[in-house]
Length: 194
Image (cartoon, rainbow, N blue to C red; front, side, top):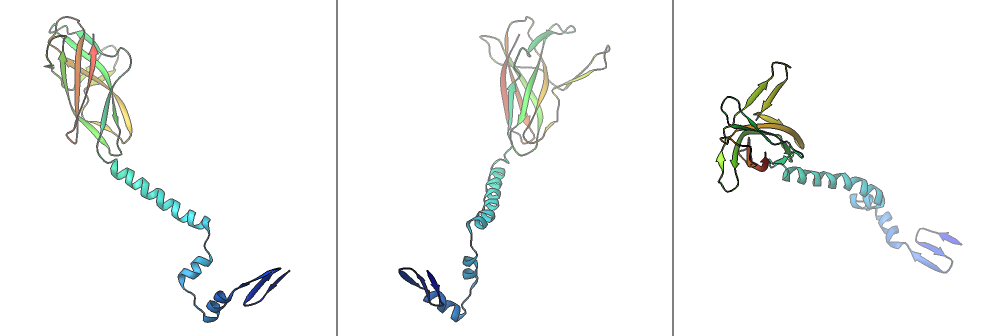
């Protein structure tokens, strides 16, 4: 049996005084905090705080990830070859490099450098520039060492690369490919060409 009054709540064996609540009601003390606490629920707090927390974490990640970064990877398979240049008698290095932009900031490849090394020798700079090959049989145009090569955030491209070597024989050669982005940062990768 429950008896309710302004000052007491009696439940079978005991009474709980509500004098504090009754005095507050009688004194008409209502502040914002009290009205908020009266309507407080865990679900409402969760609905309010979760989007704010997610937004703060996302902002921290984006601000930290604004540093420009490119990543070069060798394309898997036999993509790096040495071909004979009929005009000069030297070898031409050709291959495909995968360039990835791993930051939240757009970036572009600004320039390329190539170096070659045979076993037991030092690195030699290779002649490289943007090459455009167009065959007369098919109107297919192939662009090597394309600059500027624009990369959207979190994207990647396969880039055909080409350089002229001073070697005459088809021995296996290590090729160092260096790129520079528009922020003057350099990235490199070493591949084997044969």
